[in-house]
Image (cartoon, rainbow, N blue to C red; front, top):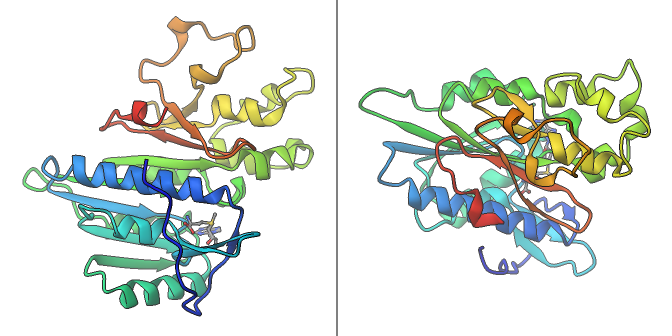
Length: 282
Ligand SMILES: C[S@@+](CC[C@H](N)C(=O)[O-])C[C@H]1O[C@@H](n2cnc3c(N)ncnc32)[C@H](O)[C@@H]1O
């Protein structure tokens, strides 16, 4: 994995505070971006990095106050950069700060900025992806790092997966799902339905289903599988007896939970339908 991230001087631009655990998440994203950038360089005509929740490009670590580069800047700085970068964030100030940082750092990359809700902008995002043709193959790495389940709808990923897209998705299980279990479980609340793309989770969250709590239960299931077009369970994290699916019933293409990013168990879940490199992370 990428080494400890550099510490940066304050540039006076917007720099949100993050938990110290975020550094590990950034290192994983940087590692994945570098791996796809280099390994796919000669296999695809064009490679695109798509950051659906890009933020301003830097973060300040709580407690130490140290400033580190965040996902967009790390993805721009890889040894074999992508041919195009698409950055989306609902916060216009963050997009503007990112733009300023990209210019100040002198990156020559083809960068597209889309301020707005990534779920609403999905058609616009698709238009920014170079068209795929027999002469020009295009592979996209989509990084989705939302704060809350509410910020990401399953249908957004499903729509993007109509193209050749690999996903690296942070499941906000601890900070959001765990803390808001009661609210999300209410009949009228559709947030988890929209996040998972179905309602099958309701029975699994029922009291007494297991003593794992919602985090574990969500970890077991909230993995996006583009080929299957649905969120499916990840066998590796299942507890014997807690799931009725036998090995034979499990999907042939098993998505993987790549790594827990903090002791609090937020996870980055990735599914590579083109690359099958999850072993690198475990
Ligand atoms: C966890 S931060 C992302 C951090 C980013 N990956 C980084 O490295 O700094 C989540 C970001 O998503 C943005 N956001 C929240 N809801 C959004 C939405 N519906 N569409 C796009 N961006 C959204 C927030 O403004 C915030 O910058």
